[in-house]
Amino acid sequence: MRAGASQSRLLYLFHLAFRRGTVRLPEAAGSDIYFQAGLVTLVGLTAENAILIVEFAMEKLRQGMPLMDATIEAARLRFRPIVMTSLAFIVGTLPLALSSSAGSNSRHIIGTTVVGEMVSATVIGVLFIPIFFYLVVRIKQRFSKNLS
Image (tube, helix red, strand yellow):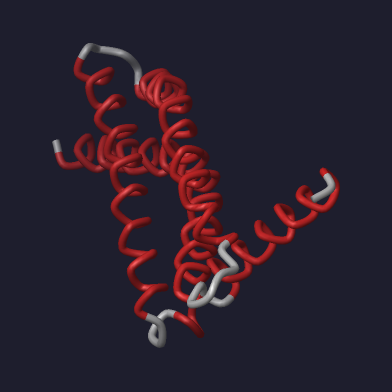
């Protein structure tokens, strides 16, 4: 196989995975057990990433660091491990998404679901979890000052 053909197949795979995981989510969510199994796996890994960012930020707050600095430091410290874990997970599921043997439909469904959602969950998570943490803690601090 030519190098260009494998690159175009990989790009097509990411396109399919993104469409399957994000655009067609409502239509496929109730109808396919493989799709649902892939989503359960993704929820677990995404929740773990969010918990780790929040725990690091809370630890920095307990050490006396200002909220903005603690949030940025937690996001900076957890960025590389989150991206490395997500990339390993994505690369590990590529054979499922690229399968073309007999009975590969189920592997293809779970592979494209996991690859597409993991890409979007990683990008969204790395960007928005620190922002939401900052906003929630800031609102909590304002309400606790008003109640005192």
